[in-house]
Length: 588
Image 1 (cartoon, rainbow, N blue to C red):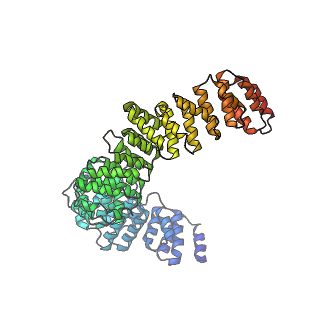
Image 2: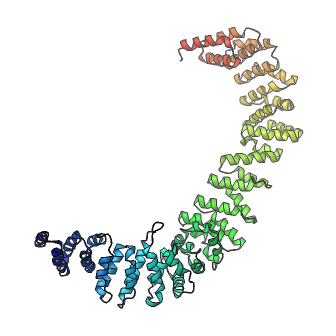
């Protein structure tokens, strides 16, 4: 090898023609370990004859040198033509091998010529090279001619002569987006090559061909064969290849051709198989089933199965398809989907079931109320609350206060006596939390005078929070019994009850502030703050002085409550004093 490198260095002093005259025969007779070095030297000088010499030895070159050979010149056609001799098998095979590695569409016409070679293995190699070239094809820019289009069209037209199946497969691949020459040939439906093309589509297991099945549904020459073939696609991998172009079924012409599919039921995978499919296949299945020409019952049953798929988008699309159906099973499945773990699916199902303007069964609304979508569940409960007073009472604790008040006002307007009776029952029994909410609702609906007796009974309960809520509600009552109870509650041992009693008394008897003025000296900060605020709001008594004293109290809780009383009473005179307290208070 060092001797070879030395001789190559000496050759560089010669003229280009002299170098070629020496290197070309040297390459022909070189040993395998010297071949790549000599080929590299030839390609270094460039030129068609240098490349032709290397192509003649293409089968002996290493991978790196083959790649170099494929990119050595801008246009490899002259060099390939120099080597090509259909009567010389080895030279022709080297040209074909070179074209298969270069994947240059400009070499496609040479491959078409090789299809007519007399040697048996040459046409087969040329057909495989042409198919490889089509697989690596990049569509030319608009306005540019595609050499592959004419070459594949010529090769397909000559199929009856050479009978090379890879040519038909290559034509099938290009039939997806054919150029003018191939499109013209495909339009000749009676051409002998078309029978071979249809047979190839029906028999081939080539994944590239299968991937284009749905695209060919739009081509009359192949659509029928594809439609007859689809029912054979039962395994997961081939189905994924076909479904990769499922978006093409949005074209009406292709959807119409899907109605011609033989045995369409076989085209629908069982649920056990569908759940293991890739997500994009699961998402394509609803549209796929919609396009197939199956009966309504089978279509609805198949779509209903898809609601169990793991892919959320697939379930959503299945619900969308089921919404279009009128069969009872479709409505039942959509209603069940309101409990889907995915909020957007539950929302879509509920909108389709409960909020489309049609009459809704109560069971359906109850299912919607259990939806995982919180806003949707709240809306369903709101609708349930308006259906009847009994249903309102069942769901009122789950409603926001404003929604409960709106539904309560609706029933109050339509059947006041029945609603008031129901509110009395809610106040008289049930858990304490529910009864407290019933008290708040009664105050919000301004029906406290109607339920005053129930509120009075609540003051005998053991729950301080419930008693304090009932006493606070008596501020809105009008009877003397409740007023006497408020007077008694002013001295209640529970601070919150006494504090609410002060507010209730101030609301019922604002001029009789003398009854609550002694509470301005209470050592319970809540009672004291409420009493001072009430006295200040009456505009009588010595509330301002009492507030000053509370703000200067040694107990921090009294000072904080005093600030609340000052703000609640909107005492302008206290602003300067509060500013002073903030500056000197050690608790800041």
